[in-house]
Image (cartoon, rainbow, N blue to C red; front, side, top):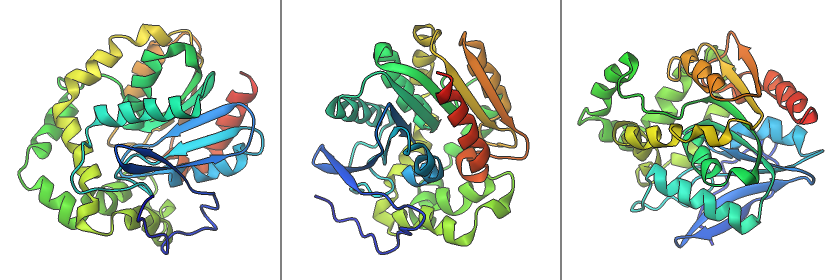
Length: 291
């Protein structure tokens, strides 16, 4: 099945049964908790299903909560040689959804989970009941001033070294993304570091960094089709102190949908589900109850 070590996993924080979906000879880890209408959680980088644990613990009392770990992340397999492209993650998600025969479900996305989840939703709008987005994007950013500055960093030949040998994304970037740095304790931070303990397990995070550099045109093709989802109810939950995915992205998302609910969290950064877990849960519960 999979050779993932679990001795580092805090089962009090993450008390879920582990399931695996085999694809491309690799084990994709997921959790499937509760019964009722389905909610599918799709994480970004450098996270995994762990970052939605608080919401899943509560919502699984009334809903079926499913959360995946992309190949290369969390408790999924992390081969040193694999197609870690964002497009392949999207294909994997589609096959996973087909495997579970999900229909009329709520899609929850964060960070890179946005482009991965929306790729499925745009191809299969009839299977989507509604959407919840936390600090993400879905368009070509190549002409934005912030991206132009970032591009120089993404092109730096030292970047692969930083990601592979220093575990750069979870060790350094993730703590910096919090509005309140104290909200990420050392013990919880360890749950984001441990999946990438070995250098050979860090190719997934590096691939997402490369995707930012190479896939802007593809992101643009997704946004060009956004009208296919215009009538879907959408909840936008946004940490307004996010220095990576700016509040202007919230406005752009909101402009594309006819049934939009917005929750702004003033003192929160890039990971609202971790940093402002109670506000996020309350917003989700209210949105789901009214749907």
